[in-house]
Amino acid sequence: MSEQIEKNIHCPYCDEVITLLIDPSISEQSYVEDCHVCCQPISVDVVIDETEAVEVYARQENE
Image 1 (tube, rainbow, N blue to C red):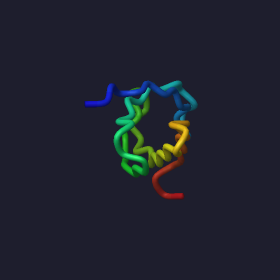
Image 2 (tube, rainbow, N blue to C red):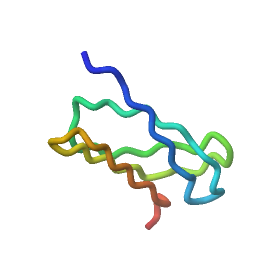
Image 3 (cartoon, rainbow, N blue to C red):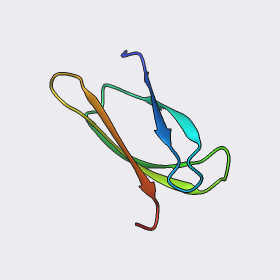
Image 4 (tube, helix red, strand yellow):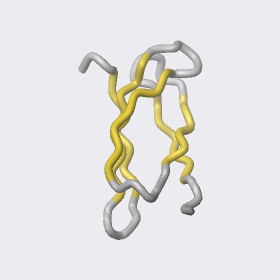
């Protein structure tokens, strides 16, 4: 079982830094995570390439 990777993002609503736990065994992920400060829904897309580089994209849910 792969150990989770921590990635920091900025909430697209309140700009607070949020730490996400990413499962590296799944190369493409999309999900909604609520900001722990403003409680707004953040759409999160994660892409892990063949070199295991992790890219995290966060946007407002209604974008």
